Every structure is written in C-alpha cells, then in structure tokens.
Image 1 (cartoon, rainbow, N blue to C red):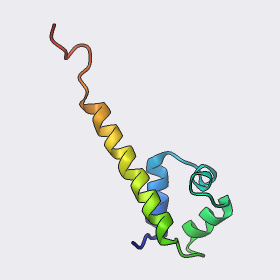
Image 2 (image 1 turned 180 degrees about the horizontal axis):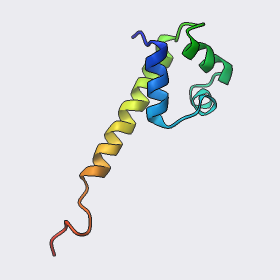
Image 3 (image 1 turned 180 degrees about the vertical axis):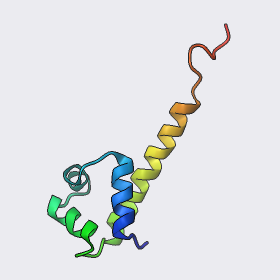
Image 4 (image 1 turned 135 degrees about the horizontal axis):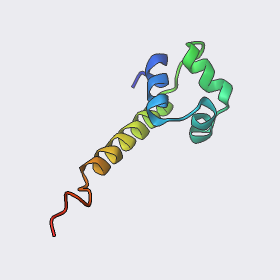
Length: 76
C-alpha cells in the first residue's frame, strides 16, 4: 500500500491527532512524521497500513455511535 503525504496528513487530521501524538502511536519521532508529510521521506508500508486501519476503526466507531437511538427515539 502506497500512501501519499496528503493522504497521511488527511488521515491524521481525521483521527484528530497532532504529529507528536501520531508519532507516539506508530513508534517514531515527531520529526519523522513531519518528513513524511513534507514529502522528504517515503512513508513505510507498515505505517501506511496502520494509519489506514486506525482511520477505518475510528470511522466505524463513529458510525456505530451515530446509529444508536437517543432516549427520545426509544419507545417505552
């Protein structure tokens, strides 16, 4: 899986993470995240897969939360 710098940036934003927070989660320095997002370094495939997986999990979790009925929707 090849991930572009723009895709990484967008996924990080969707996850609501700073460069520092994402770096901690994938086990690299913040400068490494910055270099990937600037296009200075290539994003390793395992990292691309991990970030993509995290984004999908957050998306799925968000959908589940929005599908739950509110108190007003629940009939007694």
